View 1 (cartoon, protein in one colour):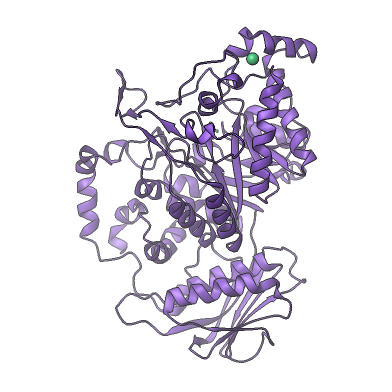
View 2: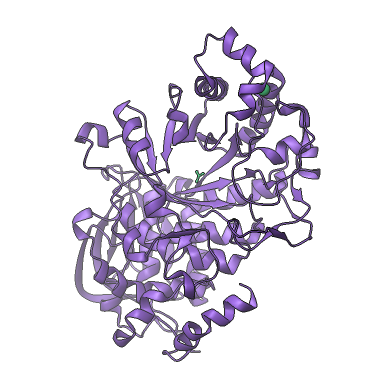
Length: 551
Ligand code: ACM
Ligand code: ZN
């Protein structure tokens, strides 16, 4: 935020500072149990409570499949209370224990049953992931430490039976337009886990910056990770002005391994995105032979869609991309690789003899079919490595690759069409889940790309289109909120745009549809933000300010 924006924002900040010191009012343990986000499926409050003390042990069943969750819980309790509990493998139902158990009777692998009695706590999960989500719920039952003295870790007796509504619950971050350091990426993953989301879509390559070290192609990070300057102000404002400052950064493979492990410990799968054929100017600037014209090219310094894309006629482009993907596959264990596919102008392909020769040789109708050829060829390569592609909805044009999952962003139409073609779909319609859009009246907000998406609108988003029948709806794996960062250059602003709107989507994706109630959500949110405060998240507070009489 620049000075002008801060001054515009000042009245809101001042109003906020007059409110009570925090947004997590003192609440008793019974109330707290009713404040969980995302709202659990079934919850029965019981008489009494259990207090976690120094002698409580964390017990997990014989085999070590739950070691990761047990360690996570130990660290979490230590962080929240200072207690360092002992970890043992023994009978998880003993007295004064927190027992972690995988129970194959729980059908949904991410489902769990959490029981708190006066004797102790058990968390049974359909798999270690389910146990992990039970731990996240327990986290929200812990007392809020509001003063200097630590509160006793007294937990309401309760029985909670819970499972997610959707299998895919994602949050995205564009690190191409602006670069975010590893420490922030880890915090983002912590937040994804807190929200019982399970996927981080890491948008790693862009026109304005290539952010992942590829050992075989060092120019990608020597040249492609840096731009000579950056546009100031909004793209639509003319004349354009630039800041004159070199900008960039990238993640080394060692850093990526560290992040992947960190995510694994938090039940988060990372989907790396390597954009093709468009949004590839940083790669072309690094290796000009990859474009139709041969360049020279420059890493982009402003936002938009650029005509220079990978040439679809040259085999050397596919060799390059396969080499890059080899290194990406070795770093990311998840089954999906996102290959982009959006906003790729056909202008150069129409003029390029090699692209035209490819169209002829392959018997393709036009440049849309050439894009489809491009994506299908990459898909075939990835399938040979046992990986599946996800692409933005433009990959429908010219024909879908056989196993592709479609990320529907230009509204829901692409997702609906893909589901009708029996393809898996992840919903990310810009109107409902683009977190780079303004969340309140633009005149009181820091500069954003445009659009308008309030907390209430995202909360009321329904991922299953009613134009699909129930068979077709099964192809909708879930949804994801996207954080594009043309205008988001700081971690503080990224947090402000992401939360609590992502919190609203987390509930959409996890909780039963019948329980969705925005007023109830905002009440629970006042308690939930305690956890955001603990992580020092600069979440947006409009919803509390509008309802300040209730504080
Ligand atoms: C996109 O927003 N271009 C996927
Ligand atoms: Zn070409």
